[in-house]
Length: 406
Image (cartoon, rainbow, N blue to C red; front, side, top):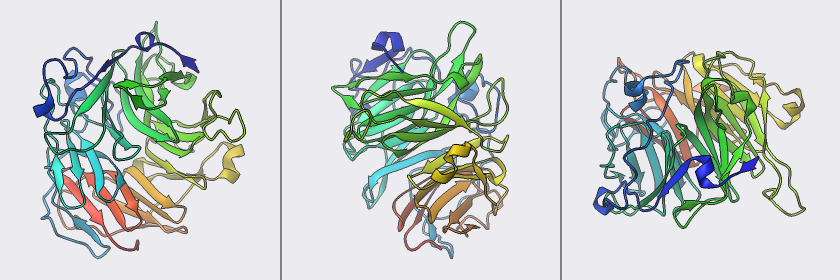
């Protein structure tokens, strides 16, 4: 691992940048000369042009609408949220049932306070309405959003026009696709666009955000992503303070996805984050050439999901084999997001309004309020504060589950 100063890492930090436009001034907004991020459409191995990069999911057919309050037999209900069919909800995270955040296309940031979803005032200093791919929280006062080449940080929700943000911009042309953290470590999974002369790390770490700056920003060597062209990490999940897992999409020089394990050993007894030890990145066999769009895990199990209903599982007993287990899937639609609460309670979502659940023995497809429409939305994101409070987001829709999983 290399630690370099901010200039060498090509990062610019701008305190006070505000998604809340009412708080922004010419001195505290994010820079207008940032590079357009290079974002691959899910399932594509081509580098998009600037217009495609603005919204990687814009080409999908507009789904049919379903009224808020409509519920299915499984307990999933459509909720009233400020997202329309022009918006794809790509990531959901929260600190609890009364503090839930979701982000997506067209710079969408929405928040739920336990009673109502509200939409943050949009950025006014940017022309390109690019996709926000990731939101992550380390508590209600520590909110991170990955928006192309920009990282945004907030100390918490303060209403649509009062939530203040700081920003940091990677001027090397990389974009942050996923964020995860635990016990003082924050990992940034990035898409990179290497050329003949320069390669960029697909993974970076830091120790948090303090005084409008990233603390101890470091590169992690990712040699499997050093080939020329577009490559890098797409999804990321931290399973322990010293371990995370990530997936990639197909790259310019290699079809299909990679799965990598990111880990480090503790340097001292009693040091839960292994301070001083280097992060290592190792590739594992996913046993598929299909793209893998989502990963979730804990100390007991790791799941990855992807194209064609692909489901793959890793357990500690199988680590030495470096190969994932193939698991039967009840669906053939692409699965794009996954989240769980334990080895017997895991949710995954995807195309054609697909929602599947694992009970520790078998994956089953759940009924949704969207099953009867002709054009079903793609679902990208799933997260919950508890097994009885699960949120699902997608193309113009937000679903909520309250109760016991089927």
